[in-house]
Amino acid sequence: MNVFDVLKSRGFIYQTTDEDAIRNLFEKRKVTAYIGFDPTADSLHAGNLVPIMALAHLQRAGHRPIALVGSGTGLVGDPSGKTETRKLLSIKDIKKNAEVLKAQLSQYISFEGDSALLLNNADWLVGLNYIEFLRDIGKHFSVNKMLTAESIKQRLEKGLTFIEFNYMVLQAYDFYILNKDYECELQMGGQDQWGNIVAGIDLTRRIAGKEVFGLTFPLITDSNGEKFGKSVKGAVWLDAKKTSPYEYYQFFRNTMDSDVGRYLGYFTFLPIDEVKALAALKPPLLNRAKEILAYEATRITHDEEGAKSAYLASIEKFGEADPHRTVESSSSILQIREAAPEHPFVEIEEGKFRKGFSILDAFVDAGLSSSRGEARRLIRQGGAYIEDQRIDDENLILGEEYIWRGKINLRAGKKRHMRIDIVTKSV
Image (cartoon, rainbow, N blue to C red; front, side, top):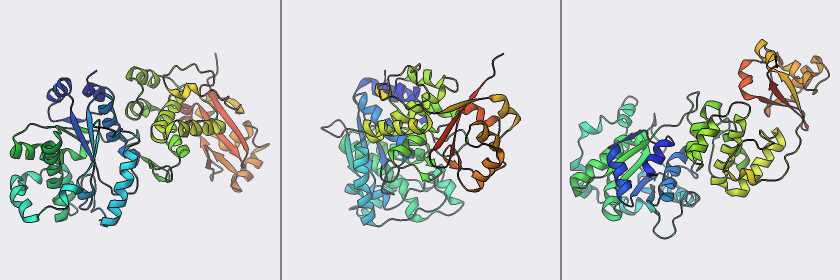
């Protein structure tokens, strides 16, 4: 299957300069394509996974990805997608972050031999002569045209510094250099990079007379409109020291039902037919699809052992969604043969939730409290938990919104757990 169609079927394609031309390009020869990653932090985060996975798909299809670490552009700061000026980092911090990014990118892409390239734009940007650059490169840019770019227009309302205004020129120059020195024909990036990508295509055509192409990925948000990659604790980092494999697993395990299919397409290498089959599962079995998503995403970032440990820790705490293995999958999660511990549970009819189920009654029915009064005291003393979150409101009502989950995990104190399985009353 043409890798362009692979990316499209998995939801990666948002916008292209010429869809048919790009598809034909991949059909005719081995293609070199690049994505840039500015070292603005000491770790990449889950929001970077879509471009990283796109490069990995290219390599798996026999093409040559370039991961460009932007130590040069990082000194300037990309205004795209930001409402205010980025904090400028020191050269020392940029260099330190760049080394971390190189190591992290190697987890997803093999840079052995010539199958992929890991480059740094500081190699050609930092030593530029400013006057020569203005004369040779700046003359090809129209300020009027630059002002029409979405990333520029959004920032003009709140203020755009001159150094940020230059970012588009530098990124365009990157594409020209990569095409000249490495025969790179395609630049990819988030949808907020469209203006920068088009500028690079135009610059390469003007200077070298060559046709190059661009495509962008959609901005990933969950069904609530929240930007992907954030948890209640903040950013979900790829660095295990900043976000543990267990926390990383739980972030994906807690995916909303409506997002499971999209996330399986983006963040796993499972066949697309299997992705569709898993996404079509109905609650509560859809929770098995979430386990597979979380396991596969964690395995890719934190290796097989990290994913296995996170999965076993999770099912020990919350139980397994498909203990009888009725859901088929090519995931190596099925190779984990350790017996899942018996997790105590109680079945409660969904009708109670439709009427509004008091958290006090839930603790009583689950056998974690002998009376509503005891449940109330437990909450006031800070010892009552739902889905590992402390309950502060003794008047909390569990309504219909809980039915879609299929299961609810309650805890009294540190060790007493009980799972509520929400069931439909048989007629």
